[in-house]
Image 1 (spheres, rainbow, N blue to C red):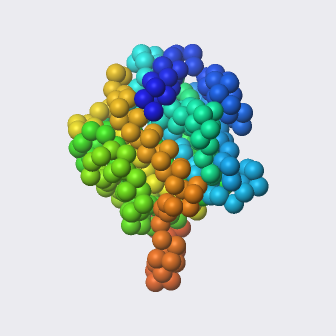
Image 2 (image 1 turned 180 degrees about the vertical axis):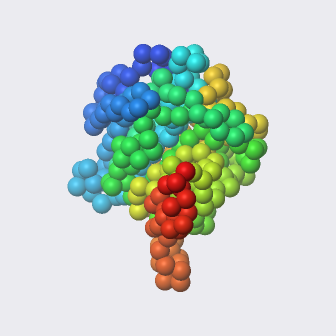
Image 3 (image 1 turned 90 degrees about the vertical axis):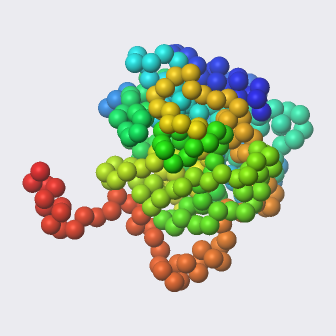
Length: 321
């Protein structure tokens, strides 16, 4: 996929790039089911891009094969005028666009997938920078609920969320890693099928993101989040797995010259191989029977998908402040 990753990075590395420009290119490659929505917020605007790649037995064609969602998660691809060029946080958008380009190429060459694939990301060359420990993050011109509303679709039976996850001290290796499966407030066991795909794609032992309960709760509740990689789980009942591009040392999300194309290529290739297997029914994100057993034993955890509720005295104290 390296040629597609290079093309996607070159397309996005522009102060004038728009979602419509990317959609036109995808249309020219045969992906005509694209949508672009411009959303304005208090800190600017961004173009949400969504493309559906039909499968031979996908629901878009009346079939029954499951649909995989691939979300390029990020705050923005650029931090202009503070920084010139692509920022580290652009990895998610580069991966999403390159996956769309690769799937288009595969269809042209006679290799369509069995199931539908829905790819979503957003294009913002002028996103704000936000303070974060241990290094600054990229912010977004719109809030997380808006991002989820435009990137997460009820048609997605499972979701891979690709995000640069370099601004931390807990993942210390170069390449990419995956999170455990998250579904409706539960952090479930890591999918053996996804582990197998990852090890085949990389030729290395699988690497796992140490996700926590805080990370699966919505942004805006004032608790610490590693980053936004699994925020789609707050807006869906589908299983979500994060695909994190990683580095050995903390790298600010707003840093330029920090996009490791080889890491993005591996993450994108993992998404493609997962899409192949998921549509065929040979890859599962979780064990439904075990999940139902957890519900029976401990009840549902859907409250973790909400903003939560403070005790009365804390709520009163917060209001006074």
